[in-house]
Image (tube, rainbow over all chains, first blue to last red; front, side, top):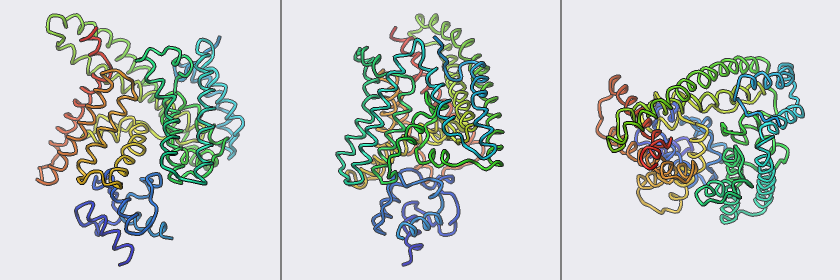
Amino acid sequence: MAVKEEVIDILNTIIGEDISDQMDDDFFESGLLDSMATVELLLDLEGKFDIQAPVSEFDRNEWNTPNKVVNKVESLIG
Amino acid sequence: MLNIQPYADPKYFVILLLALAPLAIGLYFGKRFALYEVIVSLVFIFLMFNGSKYHEGYALVIYMIWQWLLVWAYTLYRKKSNNSWVFYGATFLGALPLVLIKIAPAANWTHVSTLLGFMGISYLTFRSVAMIMETRDGSIKDFDPWLFLRFMLFMPAISSGPIDRYRRFVKDIVTVPTREKYVAMLEKAVWYFFLGFLYKFILAYILGTLLLPHVEHLTLLSASAHHGWSWWLIAVMYVDGLYLFFDFAGYSLFAVATSYVMGIELPMNFNKPFLAKNLKDFWNRWHMSLSFWFRDYIFMRLVFLMMKKKWFKSRVTISNIAYIANMLIMGFWHGLTWYYIAYGLFHGVGLVINDAWLRYKKKHNVPHNKFTEILAIIITFHVVMISFLLFLGFLDKLWFQ
């Protein structure tokens, strides 16, 4: 599976609904993701992609849409 | 001897803006006069702690040497190694002066308060402890003694925030905003200064100086007849709660406006907190630089730890524990009195209930319209006002003194 599909998969599980049609929506603004879910996301991404995503690296402005998360993960995989 | 407290009276603003004028002219022409900025900052900080407050000045110097050595030493260590206990130790040592200052009044350690206490110690501690945590995470890699001092002692925010973040601050301070951007920042600064005047010198003055003593007096008078309760208490709640907002929001606007003049975008502290739709929303709007600090450095890290180590199965349990711990720590930070701790507990439990309600609402498709939204805003406002009544300590005066 490509990185994008896997990230969407993780997001769908955490959020509890399909977000693949709202790839550029700010999920903090819509309340779909909160701090709690964010930590789940970071841990799931660490587990899935073998990347380091500490809380300090989590800048809300850089992680606030599904597309941005995909980009972040791709850059962290390098 | 001359002692000048920040943003205390109109004269201060005249002196401040005159002192910052060369800096502003430089920024307008694309130059940042770093040395001049440091000198002006140090002069204003000196004047804050001059005269009757000289012992606070000494405490600040001792404190800065302590934090400077600590963050430096930890950064050096972190380049070689990454032991969790060393990290916990460094965090503890970073927080230690503040912890001692908070325990001192309750334990009657007057010498500790005189030796270590100064206005703004909390806000400096938030900055340095955050740096230690980000260094642990590998997000801050090097210790720059000069930038560390400029970050910690950034004059507009030294006494009461807003609490900036090191990496964000450094991004601003090593560059110069474009002229277009800087002019927009100056426009905002003017607006914030005048809004701050309205908040602090008019509204907070009317509420805190004119109305509050009056309603407090009436509440205390009618208290004895009704076991401490009276309708006047509700007036105290509104007046004191609104005073708290206008006083602190006014101060924060001054700090942000001053930093904009200096070409630094200090984060805002308030975003229409009384229009919050629930308690969680409230904490995303009230004293934001503090609540986001607690969210990022306490709540999220606690959740991270509990999830990674799998201490609890249920994510609801984890978030509830983290909410209560987070808010209790905030309560203890305010001070070791029953009403600050109760205030923390109140908000911790409030956030747990709030989350349960949000889950219920999602699951059962509770109807949502303009009317329910307004109702939610009114309920949230009153829950917050009740918590402020607790926080402000008037109940202690009313019931126990």
